Image 1 (cartoon, rainbow, N blue to C red):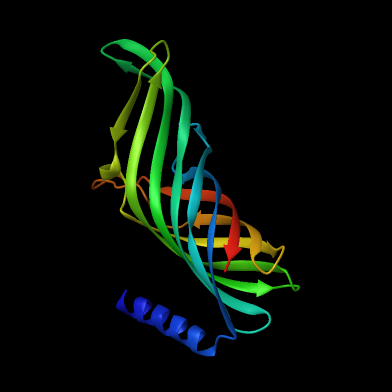
Image 2 (cartoon, rainbow, N blue to C red; image 1 turned 45 degrees about the horizontal axis):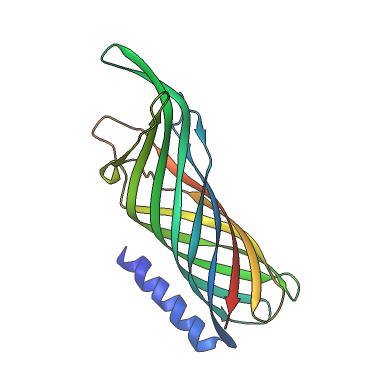
Length: 207
């Protein structure tokens, strides 16, 4: 881990030293998230969330740039019409998993043409909260539970996306986050694996 961190610092330092242009910006938009992995028996549905934060675009050449970001991201999934017995009575209902992360992607961008770019890069995420909201059929009350202890505190994945600069200051982008780390905190003998899967759409303003 120390080598990875030092390598990342070296890349960033090299980028700033050799940058032709550096732009700072703010961005935000929509997330469509879900879980993948060992989901057999559960009909997970995508849920909508949001992302918001800032970035620095470090232009290395006419075609290439590096863009580190710091984003707050609302993610998770939902399960509909799930049923189980409680004290010999069968109940059905819906459960929403609401997970919040501070994500730090480092994107490597290539401008295919002047305003259109494609991008890819790693992302590390730090879990800030994890809650479920359960609504049982026939009951008006929604019950919220803190389930942060059921999830790993750090996530890791890869991002792939594309963007378009309408003007010097305004841009839009689409991105997919492929979760690689197991976010399910399991006990010995439990090999359950869950991964984040997030499509995000955002608008950005560059200063």
